[in-house]
Length: 292
Image (cartoon, rainbow, N blue to C red; front, top):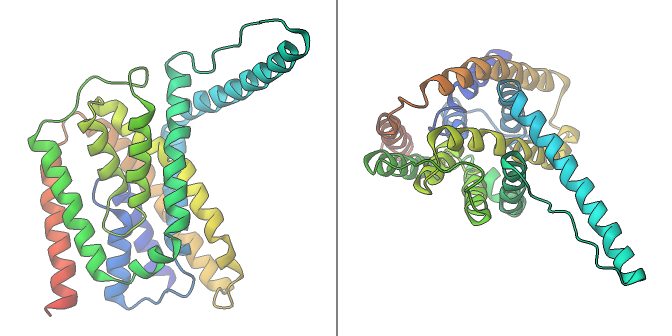
């Protein structure tokens, strides 16, 4: 892989990560067409996602700061309740425990934690399958087509409601985490699956998009930890590492502007247009690899 290819793929990642069209599917398909070999698993794609993670953290910095504060508050309340439990057991008192989840932002923070559970489980158990599927055009093409169907169903069904964090359930957060876990395979759009399912649950568009982007942060960080061992691979050279970093920086800069644009268009966006694009992309990938 050359520096030019890494930067171009980084720009592509930055644009497609915030659209419901599978950024991993695009990079996997283009790498396959270019004949780029995968000597370090999916480390390059993970670093590209780290670049767009920077964009997410920048655009949603106020929400992320509040969520971190709520996580610390929940942890402090859990320690306080544990201390009360020990005290009650020792003295026979019946002091009341503090409620852990209070207020909209703490509920939001709890929903993010719950969504991480299936995502981490699926990401860890499917790690080897992900590496193999990244070079399998059939999975990539089918993933694009399934994403397109879901986008079309969501748009034609006029899904969406007024549900926000306070009214969302933990079961719904679990299902969204499962959808995010499935999207580790190329062609299955992470934002497409999670936003569409959230809207089918009755989430408002604004909350669905915010939840989808913020819930990706723990997933991407977890994926990076899983791929850290690839830095010690005999095929990882200094120049290859520099190319990876250049791609990550390109994804970060492009992703920042793409994320801001997506937030401005969220209320006017028609998912059917993205579904048509996914149908074309899936058809092209399958045709290019199996019929030409």
